[in-house]
Amino acid sequence: MTELSEPAKLPDYITENADGSLSITLRDGGVIAMREPIVEDQLAVKGNSQQAEFGLISNLCGLAPDEIKKMTSRNYLRIQSGLKHFFD
Image (cartoon, rainbow, N blue to C red; front, side, top):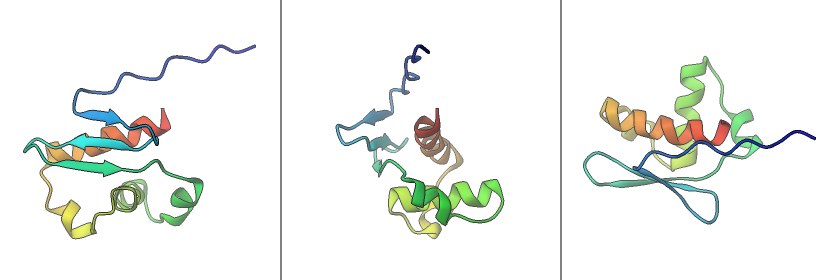
């Protein structure tokens, strides 16, 4: 029987909620909620891997693409960390 590994520890700026969603605190103190993806979310995104990630983040966070485009790179990296958590 294969042993399950411990899930990766989340950074201090990410909290996992009881429903499996994440609360991601941005550098300015704002908080973005990211729901856990379902397979349908993954099937709905198209394009190269960067475009697919962008579309997936937009869907999971309920943000318009223009809102994400105006984020600082460091805030976007925080959101990417949250997305990565779902696939580790």
